[in-house]
Image (cartoon, rainbow, N blue to C red; front, side):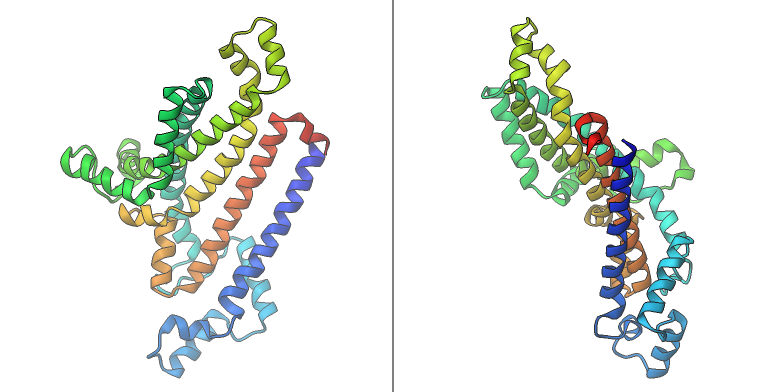
Length: 314
């Protein structure tokens, strides 16, 4: 298990190194002047030169890359050109919205998808299975921002159970905070639950066709007992992959939902930084999100090894 973890940790480090080079090259090294781009077409040469000095763009590319990486390792992501505050402070504020939102949406999608997928697999080919597959296909086809607008119209405008947007802050209390995140979390969770339910159903159906399941049934176990005791554990392996990818997507890809509900999260921060040409924020936050995605992948690999002991011997 230790050897498996160390090999995955080495892979994580190499992936981060490659990602940092690509992000730095895309922002800093490609043709064009980042300072001129940030100030716009009407900027004077003096203003561009001053901003270049402030951002440290006058040195060699390798020196600037090493300074950027070493700064991130120390927790220094630079100074935002727009907000004039450290990027680390902006990220810390937005994480308190994006991480709970991603966790909330992932919990909802898992609570919906796993029993639904299990239910459909246990009744393969029947009316329940057909209905579940139709509903999940609809959930995959409909964009999450459409779900978001529908939820706002029903639960915020008509029923007035939730607010249409905004976030009161955790200082207002845990319940008001989670209440403000409920509609965005549901909008994010529904398409992900549809995907996860289909994966769960397919994995269970494939597992139920294995010889050891037939042997368990021949020994007197009912279908439900065979699923709970033998099939479910093995069917969770592909499900773990989807869960890891979903958390990464929910954390890094919730830009549209955060803008629909005016949530001050990382997705909205990236959107604002792009529109305001604040490349320092874009560069640092994208790198942080890449780190989060790779870290989640690493944890999923460890979960693989816990579920399937055969992977520990590789």
